[in-house]
Length: 190
Image (cartoon, rainbow, N blue to C red; front, side):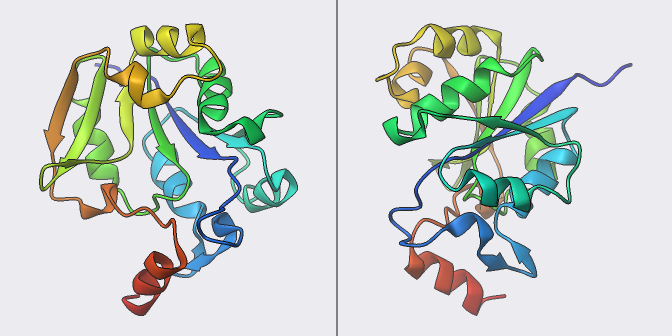
């Protein structure tokens, strides 16, 4: 039986405003933060797309070690995350895709495989009752994202679809390196 074709979509276009410095390049466990989710998705997905925006050149430089990663630039990144979701989703060609912000570094391949073993419009990993990333989205969700107005919020779109929750012991699905405090806490435990 052939393995299903799936795309990984990583959002790396934001300002890192809550961090106060460009977080994608911050060292974490011996490599830049952005390398972690990209490497995990490369091991699972046929294609991996990284959406650039703010600090485009730096993100492109960070992706040089991964020649198969496709970069998609969002010229409207200043309007917010949904513009990056839309432009990245437009580049997806597979029936389903795994979507994650680039600042969630530690979800596992096992979690991705567990998501892919289920069917539904939105398949979300859950740790201790909390949903995390990546989320697995299908064609119907992709179509809704592409049809949505630019000022929409992804959460609103996802709420229109039934979500299949997949319980996991992968705490990494919740670890969002969004602030200096979170980053320092992770660094202390390396």
